[in-house]
Image (cartoon, rainbow, N blue to C red; front, side):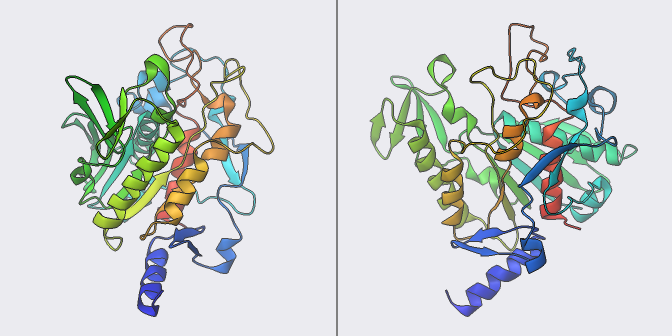
Length: 353
């Protein structure tokens, strides 16, 4: 690697305000040796009496969707509201919504992904709104699948673009729904954004009637079925190539919202009221994400939330979704709750101390 390119990459890493390691060209760049000692994603959940940061019904009834407002839906226990993520070797900076908006004045922040991205987007929008409660805001759903929370005083847009696969899903009159693993036609919506937070994982794990495609396609070859994680790897490589070819890292920060663990197997999350403790086994898909990011040309920060979420078996809506006791949701997350800590990590990465 030439000295000029190495110097540029280092400058970009510093501009990010990155507080842990950033993967670039398979090498790790950190701001300072001292900061490298703290892995933000190794730690534990601790009770904090100053949490939650907001009340979903009281402060954010227009933001938080019914399925995420677990208290409103009758959840009787409340400890899940008071946990914050504590890295083992440091403390996360306290979330300061006004500072976040000031630093992002006139900028656009976009979450691109599935309903787990929606979870995180709703959380951030609510955290910001409650930080500046007297500031006007606008909520817009335009065009289809694009949801924006706008703070006019700051000119800051917080957007969620619903896109569960990142690659193309098309409908064919004869074949049905075709998931094209090697093409992206919606990328123009990602251009001109100051901070992009991508996410895709959960839709790739669906089987049976919950599966939203009929065929995979690579090139001209249609495939009725294949290993879903292999399909995920091909699609993520397609996304990485798009980002490398279309994003200018001096203008746009790119993050990948890591794999959020679900707890649908075994006893699931039903009746769980406390986080788990200790080590967790490797989670499917995580190595694919990390390998893909390591091989990218531009710096992409991984919000490595997998272990955080593996521990939070208590953080799901469970039967408290508003859809009756027969429906159990162990994939999404209560708000207030665990996604607020994901946004505290986002704040640490983008704003730092």
